[in-house]
Amino acid sequence: MLLWGFHQNINAQDTLPSPKTKKQLFKAEPFRATMLAVALPGLGQIYNKKYWKVPFVYAGFGGVIYAISFNTTYYNKYMKGYQDFTDKIPETDSYIEIIKDVDPSTYDPVLHPGTYDISSESWYKEAMLRKIDYFKKYRDLSYIGVAAWYLFTILDANVDASLFNYDISDSLELGIAPVQIPVPGEPGVGMSINFRVTF
Image (cartoon, rainbow, N blue to C red; front, side, top):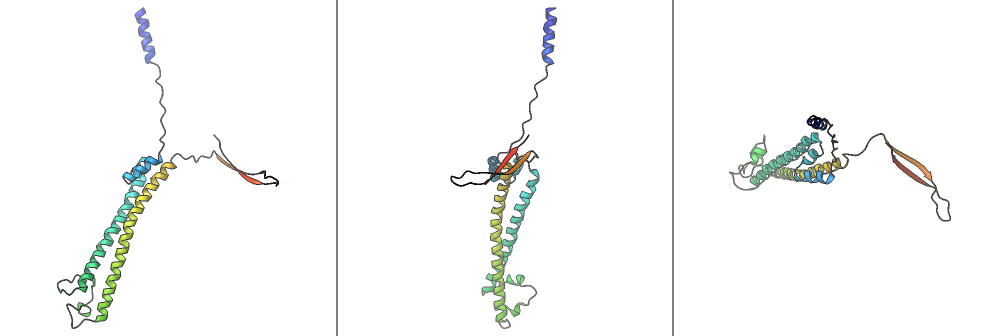
């Protein structure tokens, strides 16, 4: 009989409901999001649970890196063409590939010294210098673009984390009312702004 009562107590303890654990809400920390974004672009966005932004982060980097590659390639091409055009070595003629659809006998003093036109020669020199300056400018701007995009992704992660738990419910109220402000010797009127959160 005593043994049966002991067994019954054990079963009674087994049937007690287990305490329910509250699910903790994620609270983003701006400092951590910023440091993760600094360490690896896109990591701050992942930390903030904004996974859809990660492809845009890397697409932006891909775009500016492509711009660097494109402008560097053409800068080198026109620089080499200009150097070949201004030297006196007949074997260096990479500029012929740049100046397409034009007969070299009209502008090249090295390959065609008897038929070239000096005004055409100077015009093509100036045109190549303008192209060199153009591609150099946009190559340098593309490098700045990488840094600017990197800073933008860091700022985005920081702002997202700062506003992650921002309350935008309908329970916020704003009231504006006139208030008398006492000024020694003068009657005064001012403005008061009251901000109240209701639950």
